[in-house]
Amino acid sequence: MPSVTMTVNGQQVTRDVEGRTLLTDFLRQDLALTGTHVGCDTSQCGACVVHVDGKSVKACTMLAVQAEGAEVTTIEGLAQNGELHPMQAAFKEHHGLQCGFCTPGMVMSAVDLVNTKGEASETEIRDWLEGNICRCTGYHNIVKAIQAGAKAMRS
Amino acid sequence: MYEFNYHRPASLDAAASALSGAGEGKIVAGGMTLIPTLKQRLAQPSDLIDLSAIADLKGISEDGGSIVIGAMTTHAEVADNATVKAKIPALADLAEGIGDIQVRNRGTIGGSIANADPAADYPGGLVGLGATVRTNKREIAADDFFTGMFETALAEDEIVTAVAFPVPDKAAYAKFANPASRYAIVGVLVSQGAGGVRVAVTGAGPSVFRVTEMEQALASNFSAAAIEGIAVPADGLNSDIHASAEYRAHLVGVMARRAVAAAG
Image (cartoon, rainbow over all chains, first blue to last red; front, side, top):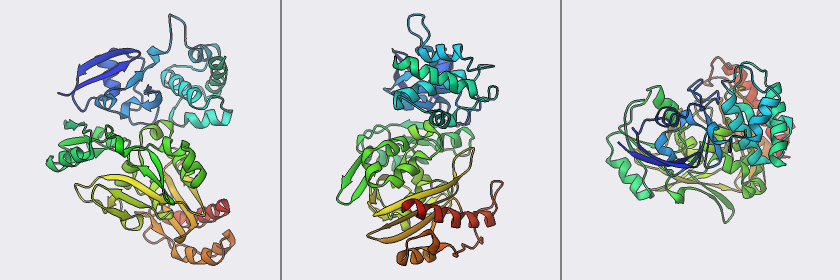
């Protein structure tokens, strides 16, 4: 069985995994980080979005072994010292969720957007969310939350 | 997913020998098509050879009058690259329009063209710009690379290393995208450069194809009006729940005119 070493939320982890183990299963089952959700499991819904070396990816469409040597950040890695990340706080403040299932992926995509583009227009935000599906909100408050979260991250 | 032996070679030579030594080896680049395929158990390779540790396959450089893009360069890197944006903005636009940001952060140009999905964007880009595919064995003109639906000229043990795009005088890509997947229902790349005018169509047929009648008309008059009356026959085009062959044939004309107008 191949061994994989990666840094997850700042902590280095090494595990033996089957080559076919998905990154989602590795995070959720081996590391018990269940904040990364599995929605469609077909690369479409984005509930499983995590950052790999700073870029948002769908963890359901990546093997754990492909993250060898990588820095992985999950939704659990955003809050620092018990304080919500500014993007998480903005989702709470602007009620950017209803059932909350898509929220981890939405937040991780949104943080990548701000890190990649800095300032983004409403159109750019909506375009960036192409790969994140929410079946409750109609996206309106999600977009408002991301606008506010982006502002808070820059200040 | 069925079990497989996983390899992550650090050099192209090691990848080639892992591939030839495997019972039924399969290369994984970004995995954006292969991993979903494996998850559905539609493929059962004995060995998976991951190219991501081979540094030589990544990156974008200028080589004479061409832009050379390493096979493992992601769509997001092509879309954001300053050289590509300055020299072949049509190619940056094409890459920016693929899937969603998560797909663009993982998916690669080499993986896309080796897979040769009939609705993928890059086949239109390569043929429309008259690119050359570089492999570990030889160079293949884009016109000869795509041979059919999910079929290419690549030999069993051949690995794409880079794609060289000649810088055109002008070019543009126009796509009628599937609104869910952003795959091309029809995508047309039109270019004019040292090799003349090229009009390449992806998404419409089983594989990318050129429309020579449009190329000839544009060679003497590069304007949308010049190709106004040129119809592409629906015979042999793809027909599915998204669009009939007749509709795709119609869209080829519309997208070609949009691309010409955008190229200026």
